[in-house]
Image 1 (cartoon, chains in turn orange, purple):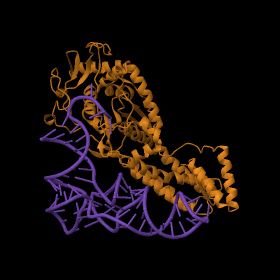
Image 2 (cartoon, helix red, strand yellow):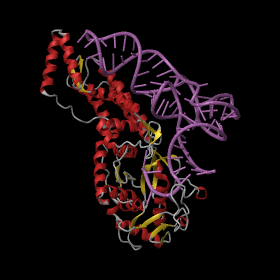
Image 3 (spheres, helix red, strand yellow):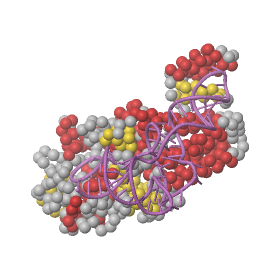
Image 4 (cartoon, chains in turn blue, cyan):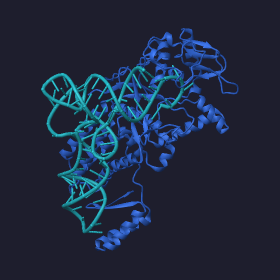
Length: 465
RNA sequence: GGACCGAUGGCGAAGUUGGCUAACGCGGCGAUCUGCAAAAUCGUCAAUCGCAGGUUCGAUUCCUGCUCGGUCCUCCA
């Protein structure tokens, strides 16, 4: 079954056909590095990481680019607050971005370009637009002449006549038209700046993505993604810039993820309910956060709350107990062929997982395929005797699905310290002699230390709480 | 004012190109297993699919209106 992607441009699910067979060129708008990333930023980071992983898992060579906006008003403001420079603020939060996203199990993109490292390309891009009459200089700023790009508004399906301008941001009177947007901003005295044909200044927000997409991926790419708020104006402006300059479609598929709400409220600075990932990772595992993010469809809103976290934890525990069970049984498994029912369950899980991922990356349903396999595995493991081949088949399929989702803890069974080993041995002896009091005492002791003991027919099994 | 989403059991969340028992997970309860647990399994609990109309033999699914919540309308993921 072919992969289908919901394309914001056409507002429909479309069959995915890459420009070059076997290769996917994908760009996702990255963060402005003026602070730690928050839970809302984490959604596209995690979701598109899964898109990338899935595409790779079905054999595509994925060229994945995520940019850093490392110069803009917010960085300038932050640098002033911190009494430091824009590059230092940027370096700090780029570093934090890598730490936090790696903490979330996100694989690095093929390239993470920065605005300040692509200034030549950006200036060239703007010059090209000016030469084509698509941009004009006015008072040291350069603006895009939207009137010259007839398709402006096609992505967001906005009717220019009906947009209300100046609702959020005052209209700059130097613009020919209110819908024109800035490509180059003249520097105010003392601000960080670069030389350009229009004087000292820095790029506007939208131009960086056009320039970097073109440089790192080419004139037309396969997938362009980001949060739904970027649809307009950001992506609309990117299209105007790129397509205005090259005359070709910028991207064949446009994907936008929904927002994360906090306790059923929108997350906003004024409400002060932002949650940063750095702090979150101190209190919960990355798997929980990933599971939570993937438990809803990417285009739907997601509500973050303590209860949601608890549910994610509980759900994940079911999967992890199953995997732990498999590992435990592996030690005492019999030789022999794989059980037909197991092979069948594995086949079904694989098939359903792909079918659902192919349906516009329906991760909640893909997770259902994981749970179906958990159930089949648990059922099988209720048997007294199991074969190595069956368990390995299950293990491989779980690994394959998790290679896409990244929701399972991959840390190897860490060893217990000697004292605890000693207690477990003592407890085994106590149980043998039916000294239940001592056995329970030891179990409680270990529970307090975060070690949960389970007595199984195949010997004792422990796990960390 | 315009554009666009969402509303499904106690909770989270799929799905429905209109039609068989509305997935899956969390949670609750009971049972089996266990020395007792844990895990697991089995059973069970719970949905007039936001409201009101319409189209249709038939609507949770399509259409219209409404209510509530959310997003965007020029540098917020």
